[in-house]
Length: 234
Image (tube, rainbow, N blue to C red; front, top):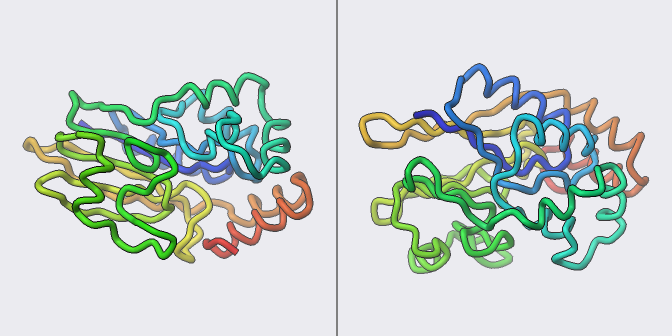
């Protein structure tokens, strides 16, 4: 069994198109999307259309909650992104679950942690220190399967906790490690165990940045372009 998992598209149609082309070549048995779907400024309309057709969101991300009006703040960004999308998208995002179990219950998928899309599973505090084993067990919401995959932190991470493999998938967009290439994850079940492959897909970052500068409100577009070009938050 081969599962393709992507997360944190953040409205980047350029990066998502490249990732979809790449993962199709891997011929996965299923494709899952861990949320934060449209909150970004590099053609969110195309990013949503591609997700709706090929990679519909599986779970709710924290910025999906912002789009749905479940969390206040950043109203200019929310209003602009909403103007790029079909009217029903925000409500659809708000109705997504916090976590989903797949592969016969062996794999749990969430955005941040299974109990809260705003909470990282493997990091804690503003300094983003590694979470303790006790913290991670609490955040797993009782899961006792084989693998739990999350997004949210925009970092590629893996650890094992009492035989349970915890994986943080890298982001399709808005990287935070200074390497501006799109990321996704391939899980392969072989001989009753799951193998994890972090995948990296180059895309036209210059075109994505140029689109943001040309179409988004000035400050939003400049911030998006700077983030994408540098591969880290400005």
